[in-house]
Image (cartoon, rainbow, N blue to C red; front, side, top):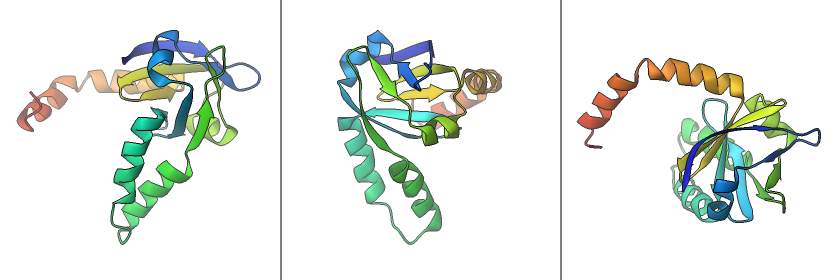
Amino acid sequence: MLIGEYLHTIDSKNRVSLPSKFRKDLGRAIVLTRGLDKCLFLYTLAEWKILAEKLAKLPWGKSEHRSFIRTMIAGATDLEIDSLGRILLPDYLRVYAGLKDAAQIIGLYNRVEIWSPELWMRYSEATKDNIELIAEKLGEAGLY
């Protein structure tokens, strides 16, 4: 299961090791793309196919749909996890997410997010102050 938070270094060749706990669930072939909030989204091939099919069905007539599809699909790259559990972070994705020498790797059940540790800390701090309000809204929407 893809859950938990892990801090890993990025080496001089722009490779980051994925948590060993995640590797079995991810398999060797994955897809990495631009995510929301300036992080990267990492998907298994099966999860990526589900998302890409949903994106492909969005009406192209709306500019916000086109923008979102372009961001997610054009920004995506397929990668292989090497024998040491590392992936190569393409320059354009590393720059987009503000990644330098470390990455906060977050498991979110069906995807992994890769964050700049500084951005993750700011996001986490801002979110924790509103978590009760968010929980209320999700309850009203029937989540629990």
